[in-house]
Image 1 (tube, rainbow, N blue to C red):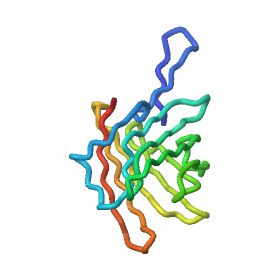
Image 2: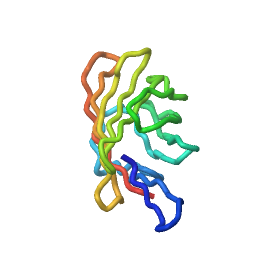
Image 3: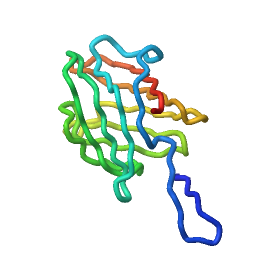
Image 4: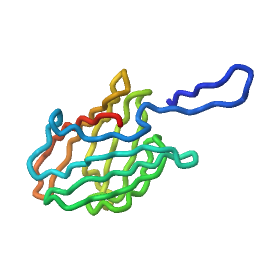
Length: 147
């Protein structure tokens, strides 16, 4: 459900989604396991009728990471580029402030989660559950501030 704002008497509408914009990781408020990747900056922008998500951060060893995803918030899989741990990602819009995310590698679900933007639009949380390379269950809670 994307909120559309239309001007009275005009056929001009602007789509809006609370997730759009640049989000910066607030490490002090986040609960990330030792050695987990950190997505320092996540940017959501419109790209035609799709959404482009660009992620920059560091992997568990502190090496720079960058990945991109372009698609719709329709629950369907779209390709991820630049992420060695995933090749497909889907986002499903639950409501104007909530997305569900599913991450896959070679057809297998590796991560599921929920992204919730605060009512004031100034912060968002992402809670994910995944399985690491050793088969251990991992829960991450990230808090991001709108830039």
